Length: 581
Image (cartoon, rainbow, N blue to C red):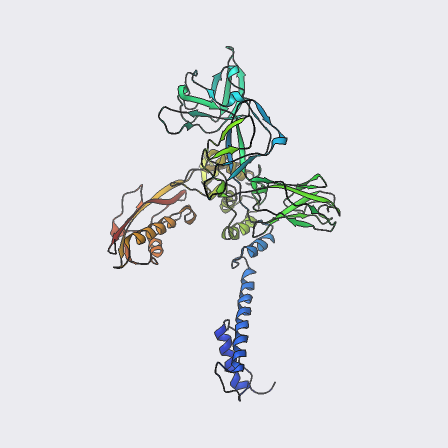
C-alpha cells in the first residue's frame, strides 16, 4: 500500500474511542467526505460499527478475564477452571438433628417404612423444612420417658444409673439424654446427648445403665427423667419419581438430575478433596452401581459412576468410557433415587420438628436439641482460595499453612490457625479452630466432637517423627467495644444515620471479616463510615478490648489481637451530634 498509513490506536476499547478513531481516518482516506453531521448516512454507519466494536471489545475482555482464576467472576468459569485441577466446588452440607419419638406401643421401623420423615409445623408464607431417617430403627414404649425419681443422686460427672429391669428397654449403643423439668421453669433443662455403653445386671436385680460422656452438671432426680427412643435424622426429602434415563451404549454417557440441590452428607472419613458425598443411588437394570470420586482409577469392568455439579447446583451423573469404568449397555434403564435439601436453612431450633410420618404407634416427635451442621454451598470467592489450596496441601500436613488449610477444609470449621507448641517437653502442632457459620454473639466454642475429628484428620496426614502430635484448641473470643461520636449534617436524620453506622461497625467485626491474629485498626473504622450519607465526621471516644482498661481518646491506636484470638463486636455505642431528631 502506498501513501500515508493510517495510525491505529490499539488501546481503544469503548464506543467513543472507536467512533473518534474512525472519524479521524476520514480526512486521510476519504478527503472529499466533509459532512460530519449526525444525519449523514456515512456517520450513521460509523456509529453502528463503533457500537458493534464496543460490544465485541467487552466480550474480548470478559473472555480474557474468565480464562484465569484470579480475574474470573462467573461461577461457571470458576467451576470449570477448578475442575481442571480436580477440585469440585463444595455443594454444601445438610443439617442433622436428633429426633425423639414417643410411641403408644413397641414398633420396629423397617426398610418398607423408610424414609421416616419429620418436618417443621411451618408458618404462613414459610416453606416446611423436612428431615428424614433413612436407616431402620426400633422404638420401645418404656423408653419414652423413664423416671429417675428413685435414684439417690445425679451429680456432675456421673456415668451410670441403676434402673429396675422392667422400667426400660434400653440397649448398648442407644442414644439418650436426661431432662429436668423444675417446677415453674418455662422450659426443661437437658443434658447433652449420651450414648449407652453397657448394661450390667447387679446383685440386687437392678440394671446398671452406663453412658458416655459424663454428665457435665448435676441433675435433681425427683424432677428428672431419662429419654430414649432417639434417632438421627438429616435434612432432605427423598425423590422417588425421577424420570428413567435409557442408556444408548455410547462412551461417557451422562444425565442430569431434575431437582436441586441434592442432599450432601459428610462422609465418615474425609480423605478426598470433597468433604461430602451426595445422597444418591444409581441402579442400571436394577443392579446398584458404585459412586467414585473419579473414574480415573476405574477398570473396564467396574460398574462405577462419578458426579459433577455445575454453577446452578445441577448434579450430573457421568458413566465410564469402557477403558475407565463400565459403559451401561444400550436400552438399559437407569434409575436414580436421591434426596434434595441442604444448607443453613436446615439449622432449625430445638423443638421445631414436630410433624411426623403417619404411623399408628407414633404419638409425638420433637428435636430436643437444635439441628446443626447445615452449610450453604461454597461461594465463588471461597472456591478461588480453597481450590489452589487443595493442590498446595496435597492432603499432607507438612507446613503450618498445610495444617490450616486442611483444618478449614473440614465440615464445621470456619477458621483455623496453626502454630508450634509444647506438650510434655515435646513439640506439637497446636491448631486453634472456630466453628463454621456462627449465628450467636459471642460465637460458640467448637464441640468436643469437632475437635476430635480435626485432630484425627490432621494426625493421619502429618509426617512421621516430625511432631509429637496435634492439639486442637478453643479460640479466645475478644469483644471489641466501640463508642463513636457521630457529627451529622444539619438536614440528616439521626435515627437513619445511627442505624447505618451501627450496621457498618457490626459488619466490620463480623465473623467473616475477622481472622486469628488480625488487629482491629482504627483506620478501618473511619474507612467504613466515610460513605455514610449525612455523616460529616466521626470521633472515636472508646476503641478497645473489653478485657483491658479504656484507652484515652487522644491516643487511640490499633487493637492488637493474639494469634489464638478472634475479635467480635462487643458494645457498640453511637452518640449523635447535630442532625434532625
